[in-house]
Amino acid sequence: GDGMRRKLFSGDNLFFRLMGRLGDLMCLNMLFLLTSLPVVTAGASISALYEVLYDISMGREGNCFKKYIRAFRKHFGAATGYWMLCLAAVLFLASGIWGAGYMERGSRIFFQGFYLALFLMWAGMLSFGLILISWAGYSVGQALRSAALITVGSFPWLIVNLTIGAVPVLFLLSGNRFVLAYGTPLFVLFGIPLSGMAKTCVYRRALKKYGLRKKVDVL
Image (cartoon, rainbow, N blue to C red):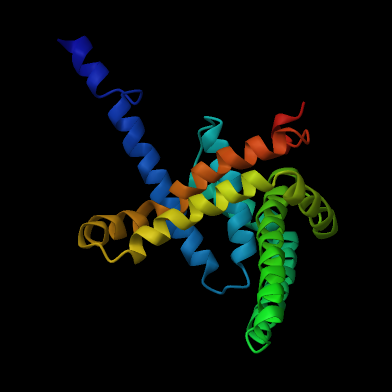
């Protein structure tokens, strides 16, 4: 009767909660893509995205649009500075890998392995550094120092996160028609925040042993 009808159309209904969450992820995906278009602002976009995803993972409700814009503005200075340093570093690494290709075989293998190790270090410092800026409010200098230590100390978690990020890309590059037909729209609508949710869980585990949590959690 009336009780069943109220239960079906209640905001606590699983269906409506799921639709609401998908709407949040779609909104975040669109915001992330739009605010990352200038490229130089991508660091602030990543920091803002993971601040909102952290709140979602902790079950905190709120307007995702407002939260994202607020976090984007809050972290813009530090995250953009950090991002630009990381872009400069990856250009240096790319030039080194390219140059190593012209060396003799023995030297080429050595230096390509060396630059691969540096690339993994760079990937860890990029990801952990922006998370520290987002969740702990670190400055650029603090993020650089701490991210280097965390990358070495939590290297397995870095590999897990890189794998999470690579999986949807590999599926889309597979050329499988079924994957392309159904996976591409899903990725365009929800892909970045969906993989970000999985990465958020990994970041929380990786940072836990260092006593690092999002500032709002600290009493």
